[in-house]
Image 1: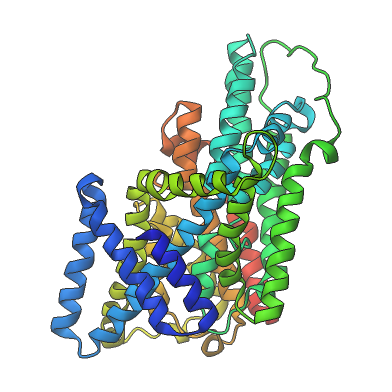
Image 2: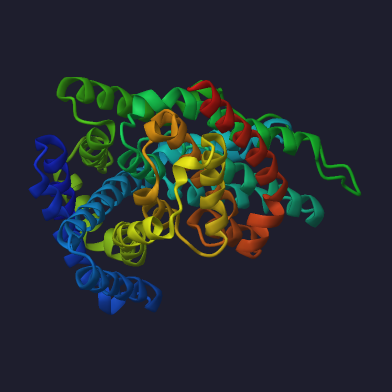
Length: 455
């Protein structure tokens, strides 16, 4: 069902026919129902809430049918996109050269380890998404466990893990493979990825640079000096070339297909990533020669093994988009009846509040997809606020990234907590507390500047 949702979603992107997008949603919801016996009660609760909201909409709203179709299409898009990016992650997981890149980064000496792992977390996050944290986190903790001094080992694990996490969350504002970009661009009228990119990259520099600065300034004071270490063996360009070549190939093909077809960047990524993953899997066949049979075997394992293991994540993501769409439509008339007019709020203030909305609701357990899908239908259009679509996208995606560093319910924080053997709340609020405040202040200023200057 999820493979069918992916195929239908790609057909919808390239044909422009809404029927394909609706089909993708039907396949996705059918797949979620098929997962019912094996998912948690939290995931089942999301499905029941979705059904309840549809019933409420059908009872109280005359236009409930178009809303339902829209929600089905949003759920189908999420399922298709999630399946596509996991195809790349599955292919990368079996690549020894990619693992070697991560091992090289984890072996860097203290003077440049944080920056190396931040850059690595960013680059691996572009391809492997959360799998980048899992891979680098495993390699980093393995390297740190070799340190005999428990005090140094404790500090080293913490610093390495937050470097990886912060590198990963810095991909969210701009990466066309991230849900933050994909969903926000779909709900902000007039937003285009290429137009938003230059402003999103400022946020990337802030997320990465502030983390490095804080780590450099507030180095832990050790009771005994650490043993001197030599440099990691190997040249950077040579050791990192497999990952860089893969990223360059993906970027080049995506740009070429986008320019040739006019299909939006998210759609071209969704179509190309599974093809690249299949070709990559073929080249991973034993013997070093490409084998289509090996690629088909890996594809079968992905469809019937890897994706069913992700059933809880799939259901939660699809239902978050579905609930957000229907719930937002239910909330819109209530907002109108209350007399609350968001257009009278000064645009810089509204965008800053929007920026903080996602990480604050993340502390309450609300998935960013759900939070953004809920608030999207009640937001005024950018032109009604006198701001550009880019400013609104930057506000939302930057808040999404901050939620990825702080919310104890996000996959990134939970993974880091698991590797660090601490609670997810400690990672989000203690390990990343000063980082959150510093990034939040700087990004709030950047958002205000964009709103005032009309950027």
